[in-house]
Image 1: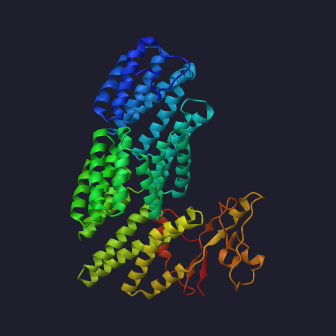
Image 2 (image 1 turned 135 degrees about the horizontal axis):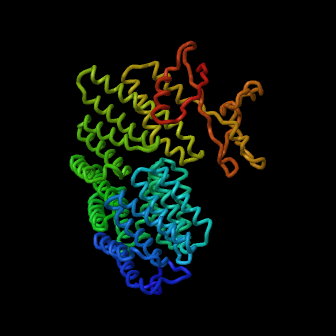
Length: 544
């Protein structure tokens, strides 16, 4: 296929030298094979193109070489991420050399930007998340510094890749904003690209407890993307429809959809989508009451996955395996799976979720344990998991702006952890701990004064009149430090454009009996160590 008839071709000011036209057409034909899922043939043909381009000093051939290297890296990513990363680095080096010698005469900066974004995806697949984020920023610097062809498409790709990374890192509010940027960018380039933004928004909604929004976004993505486009889009559409069917408990339809999605992903070499579809199929079996079949599928998936990459996919698979084995009553095996999932978490949010599932499993295990000593040990183990999860989740609320999203997310983990902690404390007959948990539940957060002072002079804090009675305002001396107790301040901060950075400081540690250490102190320190968050300030106050 020639540049003149290919709408996706990157056109430079200078044309490709005529002697390379046959190789250009062979390259474009290999790209077509990639798009229909014939990865093996495409890989062989791209290697042939690169071999034929060896030893020339013609810059137009170098530009073609960079394109071929980038597409070969894409083909390799589903098979060997190390080889894909090496080939991407070669594409970046080749494109950089062309740009350094002749500027963007051949449209090579577009190739360079694409290679940088491709490198970010491969780094993410190899669990180098910080490096991946830095790579996206580097690509955006290139896009911002130069006028290049397909810049809008590249910006969409940057937003879309960053959204996925932020979701994986548990930075959900940032992810939501980035997903909406990618949606706006998609509408500029090609509305069909919006399917990726809707998929991400659905994942964010699911993780923040908005099942209705998650279903709507997933359904919208499924309806937006038809089966008549390239193999990647077709696979995503089928997988999305299967996921919607599962959410609506249409399990037979969901099973059929995931099986088809598995076949499409396998044929196209889409490793990530293959793992996601196989995990979805196992989830269908689990939800429809067949945990043994789910466990079998998950073990097969884990055995097939790359142990040096696919971190997100392996974590999901191990987590579901823990759920399946727990439902089967194989609690020790379930705990091993949960521990494997925990070791693959890359954010405090995800670590909390896994450890909450472990805590619930320990409580369930205790209910099947006949011996009182062993039963008490398992109840205690569940308690020592649940309370730090509760404390950490309450602290992690500060990463969200005040509003329903924050509260839904908190209810997903904090509320079940609180209920479980209370239930286990009652079962164990620990009245002192139960009292401390009640005190913790009624504790007030405190506003950080420096965040108020940091806002520019034009910013104002919206004030909501409190319901009477209200205590008299305290004197200035009472708040000599930089923390203003929200409960005593007489106002409630409302989020707005001017107060988006308003956040809460950790509340003090509460002591029920003067002279004694706070009952929750050991749990607080365990939560801070395990999850890397500040749960309480070092200040200690009496509860009465």
